[in-house]
Image (tube, rainbow, N blue to C red; front, side, top):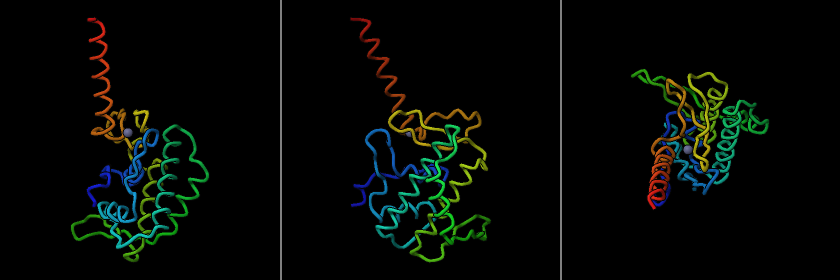
Amino acid sequence: MRAEFPDFRLGTELATSFTATLTERQGDAVERIPTPQRLVDWLAVHGLAVESCTTAQIEHARELRESIHAAATATAMGASPPASAVRIINACSMRGRAAAILTPEGNRQWRLSSASCVDDALSVIADDAISIIAGERTGRLALCASPTCRAAFFDTSQSRTRRWCDMNTCGNRQKKARFNAGRRKNAGSTE
Ligand SMILES: [Zn+2]
């Protein structure tokens, strides 16, 4: 059954990986967390394991996701984040009770207050979004150059000139489209 669900896009930043659970927003949108169980799966992949998720909780998660997307998009364009998005991100950040834990190996882990606490996991994501949008981390928020995508992503490349949210998908598709367009042009000129 699970194989029928769209794969996750695994980015390096928690908040923008989360917004990438809905892709092709400007084209034929692909929902990558279509069921509560898929959100549980996604959270586990990102070190925020919860045992279960209700329909209300996934709706909540999607509301946070679209708020982060709206705020990150505005920031990437040099504007202030919309007030409604700010309100939801802040509410999610304040509602959770996740604690940062240092492992014996010296890595950070998140401890949620209970195994069913999706709210705690969402607060960690909201907090990550705040640090990116507030400009606390080294990098730059940018929008994917693909016209059907326009995802907000966090560019940590040295030159800060990354154009696509994901090189393996949007970047590749764009390259292929250019290649095919070039071939068509060449074919046309020999006729
Ligand atoms: Zn993209």
